[in-house]
Image 1 (cartoon, rainbow, N blue to C red):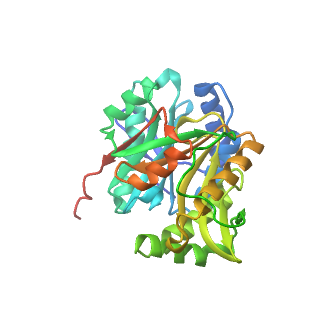
Image 2: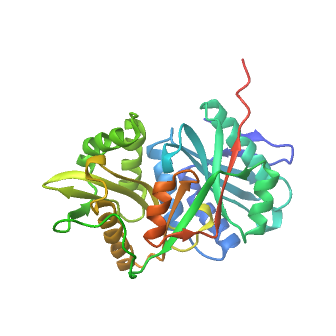
Length: 318
């Protein structure tokens, strides 16, 4: 059993368990004014299924739970190189905010990430969420060299692009577990890297952990030539309404500029609109000029959210 580490504030920091679900949901409702039970239920279940990918902490005092933190490890999302810890959500009882509980949970997260040789933490926050911005500043985060783009989920006239479909519109269908080998092959051609571990984990995440299955592939003559991995969630990064995150999109270089990427995103917008998801977001390096150009022409624009990162000091020897 994991020992409870007591912070100088007198608060015990420990890992969340399945038995904590009701307490986390109740505390989150107290903080946000809404219930996100489905979100927390899926996250806690994911941590039980894949403990190596998730780090979920509780801060407890004499009266019970007074804080929670959910994070995971990610390899390759949004084109990143290397493994990062992703801070998904953090909450502290309103009556205990400003007493160091958030910092204590962050210290616990950092210890666990360094033990896994993870060198950085990344997260997102709305620029108008001043409380979260103060917290991130105090925790040593800085703006990341990445841009968060968003697009409202509704059909709209789109300008002409160099991604015009030359033939009959291609077949777009839901992603299946059996598509992994083809996706890995396409990704290798795009990145010149073997990202099999990342893609296997990401496929499991979007099929098993997303609230709704919306990831897609596009076919040409029966062969998968492009894919888009998307998660629909109800809680990441402070969201209290359903939102979709486009983690990875790729089209085989031999089929570039033939409308396949546009077909994927067009079908995705239709599907998300049908289930009343209001926005689709993605995160892009500021130097990924071709991808930025394509997304802007498809109707994406800068989000009200900012990307943050923090480098972690190396693990102490011994």
